[in-house]
Amino acid sequence: MSLITFENVGLRYSTGPEILTDVSFDLAPGSFHFLTGPSGAGKTSLMKLLYLGQKPTRGSIKIMDRDILGLSRGQVTRLRRQIGIVFQNFRLLNHLSAFDNVALPLRATGMDEHKIRKNVIELLEWVGLGDCLHALPVTLSGGEQQRVAIARAIINRPKILLADEPTGNVDRKIGMKLLYLFEELNRLGTTIVIATHDQEIIEQFDRPVLRMENGHVHQSLDGLRSSLSSMPENPL
Image (cartoon, rainbow, N blue to C red; front, side, top):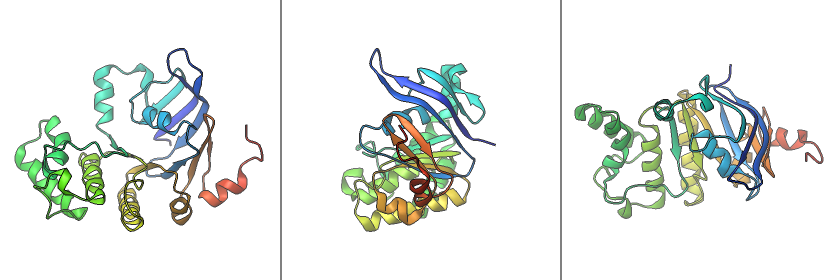
């Protein structure tokens, strides 16, 4: 059973060349994958397709058994609520406290404020920010802001969590803590996809890899070491 299925997906912007070409892979529920590859390989475009920020030019994408090309705008919105996304630049609202940033997705669903407060406080304590409820983003360190962004992404208990270079703006110690946090979320059942250039982290955690080269994707079922050893000598 697959949670996410790409089949012969192609993507181009306007009349330009294809950014992604014949991309096919399957991600199982509860899996944990790294997405890697050189700059310009198409990682950002692939992430856009995964969080429904873009539709493919051709091919088929199914997420949670739904063909995204056949979805209405309202259906896309509902499906997105089951996908958490952590952007590289955090995208926190600087005029809102850590609490209010994390509460945003719940307020969008119309949840009762009493339940919102309980859920947000519980989650911020879980990510180690129980003392920062009322802090504005500009008063927080990079690692703290990243954890607020992660808390906001998972407050709705999404089935899928996507993270774009989550360790790129923090030091090595904080980066490792974030990766262990993702591992804990994965153990709780969330499917994780992390886009990163950091080969050291990929090797240390040794999870299955989606490796991109010139708009193509090579999928391993094992960690990076198996992925690299099994890749064809000239895959393109």
